[in-house]
Image (cartoon, rainbow over all chains, first blue to last red):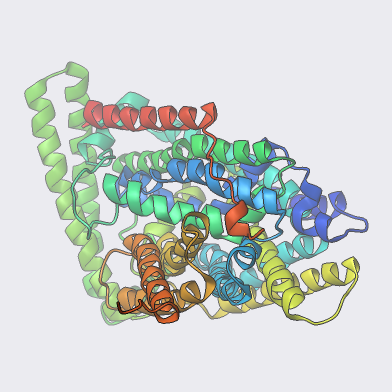
Length: 568
Length: 39
């Protein structure tokens, strides 16, 4: 990194923090601090919802996912637009009508205090863990590739977010989200066009797509009915729908974004904005990863993109074996470059047989490369059990640091850190709100002033910020980071969603049945996840269905016991 | 009146929801076309 990168990176981050604090200065009451006085317009809500969901993991992991596995991951988002419609139809009108500050406040109105408190606690557990990972994920990657100290980075990201989130509450989160989304999308577009510019002169976008397609990277849709496959059209439409419904409809970090809308319509349009733009946005980020893949067809790539993994194996007794794999990798890369050249020429001449022959050759080379990389991963694992061998999360950052010009590196790092800050800010804001209103205010006896509750919200936000930093400092890397966040969500979301579905649609079900069903369901879902009963995406639908089924059974028993049938 | 009795029964469909469905169906068709055209 050069001086220009540091100036752009530091300037961007300080501007966001400073702007957030400055824009929200002055006295605030609870309405102001929690719901930004319900003044948000639809585009602000839409951008804020998107910025909350788009964490740094999205921009680090997703291109790497496309590089290795192609664009099939986009199917994960197919259920999201449907979820947006259901939330607009059902959730938003009721939340607005009841003038609630939090999603769980509605559950007390509908059921009872203990159900509200239980869902609030489930939220705090899962979102508190996720907030730590949201900070940790970019830190571990940036520390590995830039040599920065991991803990220092965790603390810096955490403190930057704490400053404006504690100071300005929801209003600060809202105004900074707009800046962050602008920086994120600008950075990604600039990176995309730079990648295209780095391809060989005879490779235009269309040809690059053909090259990606020949390697199976454009197999976007998979209609196979297989519950163990992680990303298929069906799992996206159903599992993705439940996950999105639970996340956007019941997770306070999202609910708080659209509760601040100036009217029901503004809140609804904000989510419609997300429902229209989310899939193209994810498609574009995956496309960036596919173009990085095409770039590495003509340029040397490391055997493993995680530099810490390479250092670990080279310092071990397996270094000689690893060097042999590296030599083989270099040979494969040269063969790959030649095969791609042949493929490109065949495309130019439109010779069908030559195209097919070149495609077949490319396929064989990819298989060789894949097995060589797998052998390298095994060696790394033998050399160091702790270091991450799965390098998906390191592909894009490796490309950025080794190929983009000075200045742009700083901008792309600002993109990654902005994304980390935008989701963490929403999470801390929601965690502080739930702790202050659903638990502290609701359970503390006595009457207090507005300022008291604002101070309590600030105190809890600060506390959760510190907890998130601590979790980030003790966390360990886990397969693919974007999946970890989704797995944690899937364990809890289905249950919470089921409680909300019962609240909205099944008026005969009462609080006690729901409360007991929710406790049983949470235990069973955790057991199901631990013993790997199904792909994690299905846990949402499973948890949702189970809590509803158990609530119906308990409600039936309760009614039978209280009103036994008379013998005639 | 208890909340469960005061909750609205009618769900109001708006044209924006149709737009979301149409556009997202279009996206999936485009993805299918991209997959076929470049594979």
